[in-house]
Length: 211
Image (tube, rainbow, N blue to C red; front, side, top):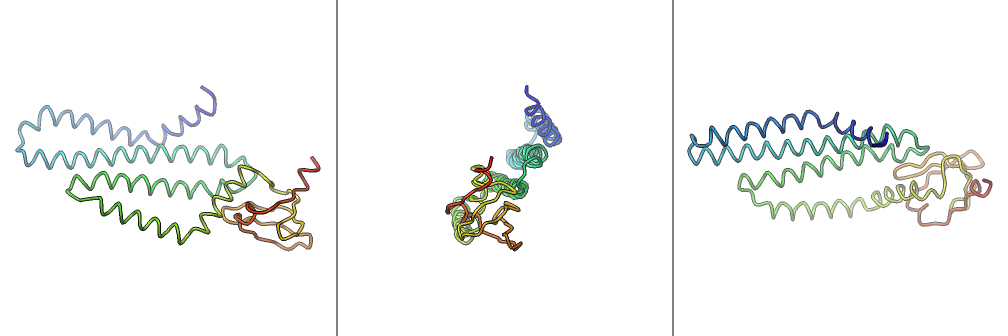
Protein backbone atom coordinates (compact mmCIF):
# COMPACT_ATOMS: atom_id res chain seq x y z
CA UNK A 1 0.00 0.00 0.00
CA UNK A 2 1.34 3.43 -0.96
CA UNK A 3 2.02 6.16 1.60
CA UNK A 4 -0.91 8.21 0.26
CA UNK A 5 -3.29 5.25 0.61
CA UNK A 6 -2.09 4.65 4.18
CA UNK A 7 -2.74 8.28 5.12
CA UNK A 8 -6.22 8.19 3.59
CA UNK A 9 -7.04 4.92 5.37
CA UNK A 10 -5.78 6.18 8.74
CA UNK A 11 -7.75 9.44 8.42
CA UNK A 12 -10.91 7.49 7.63
CA UNK A 13 -10.33 5.09 10.56
CA UNK A 14 -9.87 8.00 12.99
CA UNK A 15 -13.06 9.71 11.84
CA UNK A 16 -15.27 6.60 11.69
CA UNK A 17 -14.05 4.53 14.66
CA UNK A 18 -16.69 5.70 17.16
CA UNK A 19 -19.69 5.41 14.77
CA UNK A 20 -18.53 1.93 13.71
CA UNK A 21 -18.21 0.90 17.38
CA UNK A 22 -21.77 2.12 18.05
CA UNK A 23 -22.96 0.29 14.93
CA UNK A 24 -21.39 -2.97 16.13
CA UNK A 25 -23.06 -2.57 19.55
CA UNK A 26 -26.41 -2.08 17.79
CA UNK A 27 -25.87 -5.29 15.80
CA UNK A 28 -25.06 -7.20 19.01
CA UNK A 29 -28.13 -5.79 20.73
CA UNK A 30 -30.32 -6.66 17.73
CA UNK A 31 -29.10 -10.28 17.82
CA UNK A 32 -29.84 -10.41 21.54
CA UNK A 33 -33.28 -8.86 20.99
CA UNK A 34 -34.21 -11.26 18.18
CA UNK A 35 -33.19 -14.36 20.13
CA UNK A 36 -34.24 -13.45 23.69
CA UNK A 37 -36.57 -10.43 23.90
CA UNK A 38 -38.73 -10.55 20.76
CA UNK A 39 -40.53 -13.84 21.57
CA UNK A 40 -41.67 -12.34 24.89
CA UNK A 41 -43.14 -9.15 23.45
CA UNK A 42 -46.56 -8.56 21.94
CA UNK A 43 -46.84 -7.97 18.15
CA UNK A 44 -47.55 -4.27 18.82
CA UNK A 45 -44.43 -3.84 20.93
CA UNK A 46 -42.37 -5.84 18.44
CA UNK A 47 -43.50 -3.54 15.61
CA UNK A 48 -42.67 -0.37 17.52
CA UNK A 49 -39.37 -1.73 18.80
CA UNK A 50 -38.38 -2.73 15.26
CA UNK A 51 -39.28 0.76 14.03
CA UNK A 52 -37.13 2.50 16.63
CA UNK A 53 -34.26 0.06 16.19
CA UNK A 54 -34.34 0.57 12.40
CA UNK A 55 -34.18 4.34 12.98
CA UNK A 56 -31.11 3.98 15.20
CA UNK A 57 -29.56 1.62 12.65
CA UNK A 58 -30.00 4.14 9.78
CA UNK A 59 -28.67 7.00 11.92
CA UNK A 60 -25.56 4.99 12.87
CA UNK A 61 -24.92 4.12 9.21
CA UNK A 62 -25.36 7.78 8.31
CA UNK A 63 -22.82 8.80 10.97
CA UNK A 64 -20.32 6.30 9.56
CA UNK A 65 -20.77 7.58 5.99
CA UNK A 66 -20.50 11.19 7.18
CA UNK A 67 -17.32 10.48 9.13
CA UNK A 68 -15.77 8.63 6.19
CA UNK A 69 -16.54 11.56 3.89
CA UNK A 70 -15.18 13.97 6.52
CA UNK A 71 -12.00 11.91 6.80
CA UNK A 72 -11.44 12.05 3.05
CA UNK A 73 -12.03 15.83 3.00
CA UNK A 74 -9.72 16.36 5.98
CA UNK A 75 -6.97 14.30 4.40
CA UNK A 76 -7.28 16.20 1.11
CA UNK A 77 -7.20 19.57 2.87
CA UNK A 78 -4.11 18.72 4.93
CA UNK A 79 -2.12 16.77 2.34
CA UNK A 80 -3.15 18.12 -1.06
CA UNK A 81 -4.88 21.51 -0.78
CA UNK A 82 -2.28 22.86 1.66
CA UNK A 83 0.50 22.16 -0.86
CA UNK A 84 -1.10 23.76 -3.92
CA UNK A 85 -0.31 27.34 -4.84
CA UNK A 86 -3.93 28.38 -5.41
CA UNK A 87 -6.40 28.91 -2.57
CA UNK A 88 -9.30 27.67 -4.70
CA UNK A 89 -9.31 24.12 -3.38
CA UNK A 90 -8.79 25.40 0.21
CA UNK A 91 -12.01 27.41 -0.15
CA UNK A 92 -13.93 24.66 -1.95
CA UNK A 93 -13.26 21.92 0.64
CA UNK A 94 -15.39 23.46 3.45
CA UNK A 95 -18.21 24.14 0.97
CA UNK A 96 -18.15 20.59 -0.41
CA UNK A 97 -17.99 19.17 3.12
CA UNK A 98 -21.11 21.08 4.18
CA UNK A 99 -22.98 20.14 1.00
CA UNK A 100 -22.09 16.45 1.38
CA UNK A 101 -23.22 16.49 5.03
CA UNK A 102 -26.60 18.00 4.08
CA UNK A 103 -27.10 15.51 1.23
CA UNK A 104 -26.19 12.52 3.44
CA UNK A 105 -28.62 13.52 6.20
CA UNK A 106 -31.44 14.36 3.78
CA UNK A 107 -31.12 10.87 2.29
CA UNK A 108 -31.13 9.37 5.79
CA UNK A 109 -34.27 11.35 6.65
CA UNK A 110 -36.01 10.11 3.51
CA UNK A 111 -35.17 6.54 4.54
CA UNK A 112 -36.39 6.99 8.14
CA UNK A 113 -39.71 8.77 7.50
CA UNK A 114 -41.47 5.75 5.90
CA UNK A 115 -40.85 3.80 9.15
CA UNK A 116 -43.38 6.18 10.76
CA UNK A 117 -45.94 6.03 7.98
CA UNK A 118 -44.90 9.25 6.21
CA UNK A 119 -45.43 9.31 2.45
CA UNK A 120 -42.19 10.73 1.11
CA UNK A 121 -43.33 11.07 -2.54
CA UNK A 122 -44.72 14.57 -1.95
CA UNK A 123 -41.67 15.47 0.13
CA UNK A 124 -39.29 14.36 -2.64
CA UNK A 125 -41.29 16.42 -5.16
CA UNK A 126 -41.10 19.47 -2.88
CA UNK A 127 -37.37 18.99 -2.40
CA UNK A 128 -36.91 18.72 -6.17
CA UNK A 129 -38.85 21.92 -6.80
CA UNK A 130 -36.98 23.73 -4.01
CA UNK A 131 -33.61 22.54 -5.32
CA UNK A 132 -34.51 23.73 -8.81
CA UNK A 133 -35.57 27.14 -7.48
CA UNK A 134 -32.34 27.49 -5.48
CA UNK A 135 -30.25 26.40 -8.48
CA UNK A 136 -31.96 28.96 -10.72
CA UNK A 137 -31.53 31.72 -8.14
CA UNK A 138 -27.86 30.92 -7.63
CA UNK A 139 -26.96 29.91 -11.17
CA UNK A 140 -24.37 32.68 -11.56
CA UNK A 141 -22.66 31.69 -8.31
CA UNK A 142 -22.70 28.00 -9.24
CA UNK A 143 -21.39 28.77 -12.72
CA UNK A 144 -18.51 30.82 -11.26
CA UNK A 145 -17.62 28.05 -8.79
CA UNK A 146 -17.55 25.45 -11.57
CA UNK A 147 -15.51 27.80 -13.75
CA UNK A 148 -13.05 28.33 -10.88
CA UNK A 149 -12.66 24.58 -10.51
CA UNK A 150 -12.03 24.20 -14.25
CA UNK A 151 -9.39 26.97 -14.09
CA UNK A 152 -7.67 25.04 -11.31
CA UNK A 153 -7.74 21.85 -13.42
CA UNK A 154 -6.85 23.34 -16.83
CA UNK A 155 -4.38 25.91 -15.38
CA UNK A 156 -4.54 28.56 -18.13
CA UNK A 157 -2.69 30.70 -15.58
CA UNK A 158 -1.09 30.24 -12.18
CA UNK A 159 -0.36 32.49 -9.23
CA UNK A 160 2.14 35.23 -10.11
CA UNK A 161 1.79 34.59 -13.87
CA UNK A 162 1.77 37.63 -16.17
CA UNK A 163 -1.33 37.51 -18.39
CA UNK A 164 -3.57 39.66 -20.56
CA UNK A 165 -7.20 39.76 -19.44
CA UNK A 166 -10.13 39.65 -21.89
CA UNK A 167 -10.56 43.39 -21.27
CA UNK A 168 -7.00 44.02 -22.49
CA UNK A 169 -5.15 44.84 -19.24
CA UNK A 170 -1.72 43.32 -18.64
CA UNK A 171 -1.83 41.98 -15.08
CA UNK A 172 -0.16 39.63 -12.62
CA UNK A 173 -2.23 36.88 -10.99
CA UNK A 174 -2.69 37.44 -7.24
CA UNK A 175 -5.36 34.92 -6.32
CA UNK A 176 -7.69 32.35 -7.89
CA UNK A 177 -10.80 32.31 -5.71
CA UNK A 178 -13.95 30.21 -5.61
CA UNK A 179 -16.10 32.74 -7.47
CA UNK A 180 -13.68 35.49 -8.51
CA UNK A 181 -9.99 35.88 -9.21
CA UNK A 182 -7.84 38.88 -8.32
CA UNK A 183 -5.13 40.48 -10.46
CA UNK A 184 -2.62 43.30 -10.06
CA UNK A 185 -2.45 45.71 -12.99
CA UNK A 186 0.66 47.57 -14.16
CA UNK A 187 -0.58 50.75 -12.45
CA UNK A 188 -0.88 48.80 -9.13
CA UNK A 189 -4.69 48.59 -9.21
CA UNK A 190 -6.47 45.43 -8.04
CA UNK A 191 -8.75 43.96 -10.71
CA UNK A 192 -11.37 41.39 -9.68
CA UNK A 193 -12.90 39.25 -12.45
CA UNK A 194 -15.62 36.56 -12.18
CA UNK A 195 -14.23 33.11 -12.98
CA UNK A 196 -16.98 32.45 -15.52
CA UNK A 197 -15.85 35.43 -17.59
CA UNK A 198 -12.25 34.17 -17.51
CA UNK A 199 -13.22 30.63 -18.54
CA UNK A 200 -15.26 31.85 -21.51
CA UNK A 201 -12.68 34.30 -22.87
CA UNK A 202 -9.26 34.27 -24.48
CA UNK A 203 -6.40 34.55 -21.98
CA UNK A 204 -2.87 35.43 -23.09
CA UNK A 205 -0.24 34.02 -20.71
CA UNK A 206 3.18 35.66 -21.10
CA UNK A 207 4.82 33.58 -18.34
CA UNK A 208 4.19 30.29 -20.13
CA UNK A 209 5.92 31.72 -23.19
CA UNK A 210 9.02 32.62 -21.17
CA UNK A 211 9.49 29.12 -19.68
